[in-house]
Image: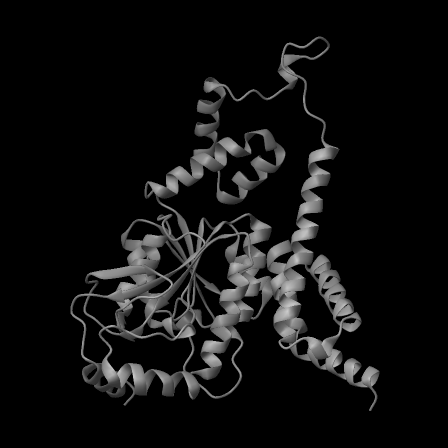
Amino acid sequence: MGPSSSRDARVRAAWEADRGYLLAIAAGMLGRPAEAEDVVQEAFARLAGASIDDIGDVLGWLVVVTRRLCLDRLGSAEARRTTAIPELPEAGQEGVDPADRLTLDDEVRRALAVVVDRLSPAERTSFIFTFPEAAPSLRGRKRTQLQQGAAMRIVIFGANGQPGRLLTEQALAAGHDVAAVTRRPVEFPITHDRLTVVEADVHDAPAVDRAVEGADVVLSALGVPFTRKQITIYSESAGNIIAAMSRHRVKRLIVVSSSATEPHHHADGGFALNRVLQPLVTATIGKTTYADMRRMEDLVRGSDLEWTIMRPSGLFDAPGVTAYELHEDQAPGSFTSRAGLAASMLDQATDTRFVRKAAAVTTSEGVPTLFQMIRREALKKK
């Protein structure tokens, strides 16, 4: 096989293995599947023309190229919008009727405040599209409402897992409207006047799109058991959720990952955790899980959303929420209660400290020993 045939074979192999992942990245950034397909094809065309033998990490190279192509397109689109729409003349200028120009003075702002309070999220988006001059005022007011803890419509993916159920209960208790997304709604045990149970599979992009519509905040508490088989639920769900949020102009996203995506020394972990258990799990039964979580984190980081990645440590059950700590990227603690993880996610819906950052969350009160935790988790599975 000659050099050209070898290069073509590597490009084809990359196309078959990585095209779906790159499409998710592009769709998440652009919000338009057809344009995402064009970007991915261009990325592979550039790969075919490059010295592929000099590229150590082909997927990493393709991810960088795909993101840059997306950014180029977004920049070009913004430039077209800026140059295509002429500036409106100032009110009172000769030949211009002031009534034809939307002036956001104090009186109009107060009127808009009354209007926006009566709109559903979908209607609010339509209003902004119709009156783009009003968008800065309304967006600023909406963010202020979220920061002040006003009631929101929260969409929760993975709602039927343990953290998801706790998160649903806590969000309802806080006065929010909740859409709990699950594949098996008949098995969902929670009922409430402000709860809507939505049937959707996160692999189904149209179903995810319908679930996200009208949301103020999206929380993903998705999780699956360890397996040595290939796992894609984290990255595929992230791609579909990001694309849906982009289409519906929903900005705030919180997703659950794991501290094991960046294995590190835990100050209170001791020899058994730091030198034995953590390396063993990340290299064996957790290898495919953490690999897909890292792909999910890449997709989330590449989006233009106001995202936060939550990284809990070893999860355990607790009777309620106790004190927990948040650190950027990595935390010294070893364990996180599921109730504390849910509470921290709900807090992040209105907290801006970790916007576009990873927040490592660990429980600092009522923490079990390593032996106690292993024993508890083992007994749960019997």
